[in-house]
Image (cartoon, rainbow, N blue to C red):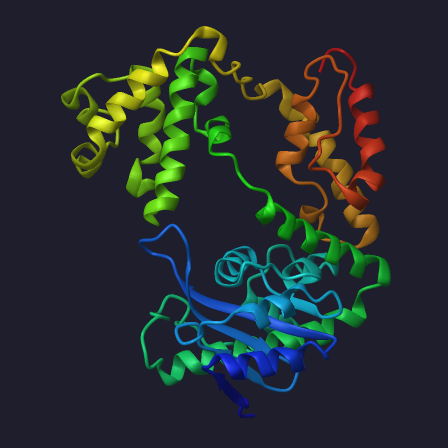
Length: 377
């Protein structure tokens, strides 16, 4: 059956349709974008499915995004998405707003035990028995005019996303529907949390091996790289490659020749920012000891893997009991944070990342398991 497609290419049409969509119980929402040589995604198309047809919004010709922002923030309209982390970046970049309430069909599929982290095509095949065409996901969405196949691909996404929602929603109990919306709210909250560039060094590879003085240098390098990537709208690795950060902090070169010999150091970086990097390293390396960051904890030892397995089994058992994909129950990072809070002898604290129904349902069992593990893991 042919899909009814409508284009929105001017501010007046967008405002009118957003006002109409605000009277609906839900809208399906998707984006197409380019992100090859930029830090921020560049929107190429915004798709809205209203359950009847597909609306294609051309971001290259729209100037006033406030009506879409109001729709995104309207608490009475469910925004249906699929695996939406990058879509959220596109939307907040365009409109300054994020969608709420948010219903992610990938999460809903996990709560219905259809599969974990299901791709959109596989979910549409499983729920609607429709095989989607492939091949347009990596095409140029900034070209104009878009090809017929691009337009068809984008419109199908919006229409079928609405159909998937209408199939999945009745299968979810009210409790599980609330859980899906809670997880959606957490996805939005994660994007709203501003990342302090001066905290990024904590996640750098092998950072735990560095001395406190070296960590001070790494902290400045990571913060500078993040600020510059945003200011220049370039990928982080175009500023300084990831694998160069640790050896830069460890060896602290003081001349361009030494800088050029750093592992994975791109000649362009030496040419464009070499002198600046040398000055940054010199200044960061000479700060007073009382200003050095605290040493970072070592990774959990191999001996802890048995306890992690026990903790993971609690989530798997609850998943089986509830008929939920076990992978969605407890995240690996959450369990590692829990174990690091008191390893090896305790006491342990539930991490902030264990929230909502998961904390209530599994928190006591996790702490009990760690208490039962005894002082010798």
